[in-house]
Length: 319
Image 1 (cartoon, one colour):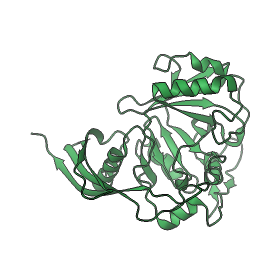
Image 2 (cartoon, helix red, strand yellow):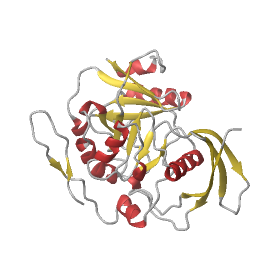
Image 3 (cartoon, helix red, strand yellow):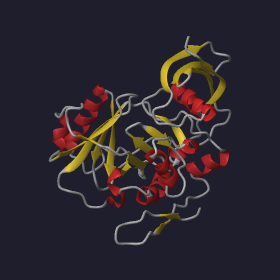
Image 4 (tube, one colour):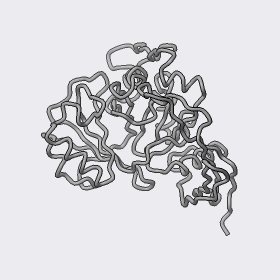
């Protein structure tokens, strides 16, 4: 794997950074060799709580970090009740941070996309502050979260950390983050506020950044849009591929309908999306993978996963 160039820094030349090398048997290497499709694998969470926490993270990042242990389990319970997913974040390279740590609430629902940042003096504040649009200041540029959670999977650290340090954007817009899921697709990136999740991002991620700076998705590495169910993600991705509609706000899901199962273990769905010339109706089918493989480096035994297959697409012109 070739070296990835780092971003230009004020007062210094662009430095090359290694893209990260892994043993042949690691999960992300094997997934690349098999050609596993990452389609429709973004997490379904619609709201995300980002909690800045420098230093090391254990496998359960919130509970096994320097975050106040007296607060961690209560914060996790509050998040579960509210349907909010918690991500620890830190600056690439574990650089020192201000005494007042940052936190944010991100909403990725279509039409409500926002990331609002605030600071906290103590971790306990997060148990009481409102998680809504009354707190914090909204970000006006995309926020990039790169999974670097090595205690969860080695692939995420080896491939994620160089990418987080090399992304060619303002350093203020980039964070390392805890487990995003889909370890075998490392390096994984979540781009907020729209919630697009990417996997197997190559090099320094320049093409990904270029696309989002222009308000488009980077289709070659797209896993899906967070906040949507897997059928909607699969239908939207197929429609983007067929119709060339790459705007971050294109093809908002209008309806998802389950269809009769064609065979045991298979599921079929009709997904209706809002298109510029009328509704776009996509039929997708999900099946269990024929073979079982280790889906993470730490998996004790092989596992199956669901694969997604487009069957039909039609545009319904308005009456």
